[in-house]
Image (cartoon, rainbow, N blue to C red):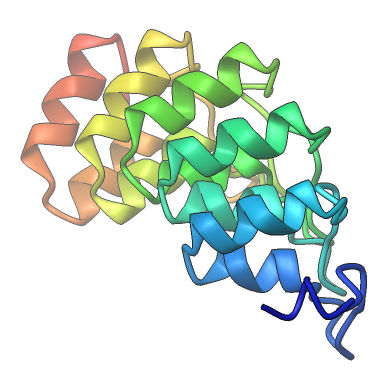
Length: 174
């Protein structure tokens, strides 16, 4: 294995990606664990600010998310356009990852540069388990983007009736 031969676990490509980032991006939990044991940086991010934790969350890999948080990854990190780890998790439809991040103090109603929230990302992606987990975590179902879009409007526009029903049951209004 390259680690046994002294590979630099903190090396970065031009885009800022480290071996740990690439392992998380490719959902290789075993490789990521070996890199963490070898003291790879759990807070590593690419040149746009997307972190290793965001990649694990986007893949819905709860085991790796927990390992990264234990190794010091920041649940509140943001990309250059203010996207959060919870927004990445919302696109994975993993309720376990969402609960793990919320337990790690990720802000449920954090907004990106356009005013979007994790709940809106989940609605847009058509991820009912994520919508349900975010509602359970007290996501505000009536927040609107700077352009006036809400999770409910997004779900209606995409004809996602199961998500529309969940949002309306939680008190979402047009």
